[in-house]
Image (cartoon, rainbow over all chains, first blue to last red; front, side, top):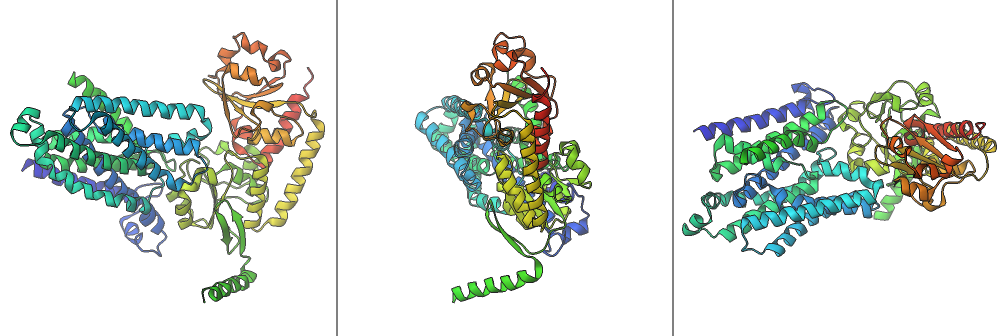
Length: 319
Length: 298
């Protein structure tokens, strides 16, 4: 009952922040003006239909997908500090994007999401190649973190040696919803297919939470579940990062908050995590947009401001 | 059939243009057409403000990073007040849209990614500005002149600018080597041979150091690299007090720089003219600065 109420309230909160996002910004709009914004002849058509609405939808998609990906990774690695970052996917995507921006600056910006997507997937395949499908969670996490560090240092190297292109690259690396619209949403849509597959893993993730031995004796194939969960997490993260850049801490904190609200049963946890991720990213983007208009900050800066202290707190608590 | 249609449309367009001053030019993304003379212009880089100001047009919105001082004073004095549309790197599209512009001038380097969105708001002219040379910026200004239907004024002003620069060049020593750089917290950012200030220096009949003559925009340099480039005349932008020169000036290598030895080192404190403005007015002020600095009695 409590979980039902929590999820309902979360969904309500999402709707409320979407309404706020549509109404607030450099120009504040009334309810009637928002409605008129859906009519192509209205003077608010661009603001509502081409700007605030697609951005809110994108925040919902990316927030939900990144959070779900975080919950899957935490579910199979069984470590509260785990997040999609420990797979090195965002860093691999970041490296590919920075390579494109610094070494081939004349290439059209159209290719950026595709480069980032392939970078993320290649990073995941490489991790799989290094670890194989039968290695333990800890080995996977440590290898992933090491690879992530390697990619990040390659990014730093590129930015130090090619200072010209640094501004664009830095902007992309903070993760932002600015300048994204319907096009980017259509690019994300096919990846939504992964969500039902993720939900279908819920029961097996619950068993894995009891420990590898118990899960095996109850008939769950650990390595298969892990492979599936991580593959889905990689797909979700890589697609989101390719569109918005690596939005930090989202995949880490959303599952934690959701766990506090509804507990650890994955049947409830996974959808709730998505709702929490949506709330966080919608709020981060809204604040980034209205804190000092017309200056647009990056949503990634906002999630980092909330996320970094939370991460530290977690670190101390776990120890 | 398709061809006939195409020709018909072109014919129609030509007829139409006779009535409405339609103008088609080539910008960084291909062909750009505007049907009427734009009245409400939003610009997303400083050099475009310069181009409008010199033909007496005031933009309604500027991506001025929410700091009006960033538009250099000679330009601020010419144009009317404007509304800020945010940063140059991430301009606020909803603010731009709320200004109901009939022309947006965007920078190919910064704004290619939002070009399609800008087009949904208003016809968008996309031209080179950031990391471009003085010559390319002059060409961009000429294009802007055509689009805002002030071709004549722009050509006159550009010709006048050329004469002014030639006169300034007369007052400057020929062929000497001048380097401009900005002192930052950990290093100096040198503006090399293919940067805006580098190309202005060359246009005034002087030289920039040979070793970095083909680099664009900025070269990050430590003290040792600086010594190997070793510019004869060195102009340094010191935009805040907390910069690397504080450290370098106490180091042995600093005194080996030929500009330091011969006291041909000069300091500037306004970041906007030399680094950010990248325009025609800015080029003239840079020339005046150079005359003042390089002709000082030693």
